[in-house]
Image (cartoon, rainbow, N blue to C red; front, side, top):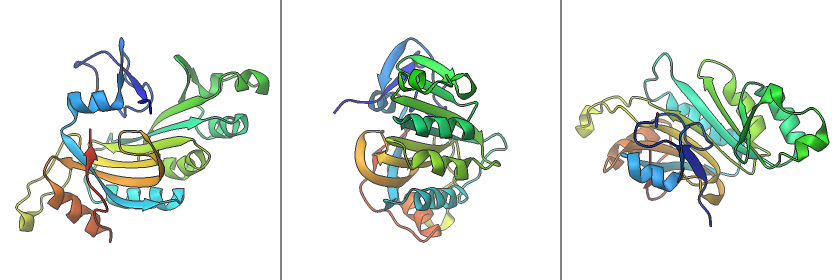
Amino acid sequence: MTSRLVHCGGFGCDLMQHVGLGKIMGTRWYSVWELGILVGNTRAYPVYRSADVASIVSVASSLVRCGDAHEESTVGLDAELQDVRDVMRVRELFPEAVYTHRRSDFRGVDLPVDTAALAGLLPMNLAAEEDLRGDVLSRAVEVLRPAVWGQLAWMGLSWPAVPELNLGPEYARSGVQACFNTDANLEPVAGHTVYVHVYRGDEDRARHLARMIGKDVVGPPEHGW
């Protein structure tokens, strides 16, 4: 099994961007696992699993509302597409997103119109970053249903204090991740999972956040951000 790769220039790059598909620019290609070792202060606890894309997005969105988002907070969307018809439909939904074929990047509005030319750019990876206040989630469902794999990542959420558990507020790299046909490190798996990211050893917070939306931790933690 090969690792998905991320382009990064080293410790000085902006690692708070979602890292699935070349959003971080630089000179060296890292695997997601390598990036996690470099900067991963969190653990990703699975709190919900389903084969239904819409239910995963809904649960993840509910979990996000348990935290405090900054005014400029965004959600990152990554997906791999391998069908021309899917790409044509998706670029109408995300015309300003970055579409990557190997190491060539295109905006959706700049992709070729000719289907044969578009087919030559497959498979294609999409990377978008959208304002939380928009309709990104409803559009994302239409992208993620046909995708080979994908993720939604809400990074930089602040988790509130939980006095009854002796937990103070938590900042930086905490967040929510919805993974489609991958695990938290974007390695291929069957099915879809919602993860909550908390600091290492903070399972009580993960379980508390999950129970706030009627869920619970459903498996061991994975390497986080």
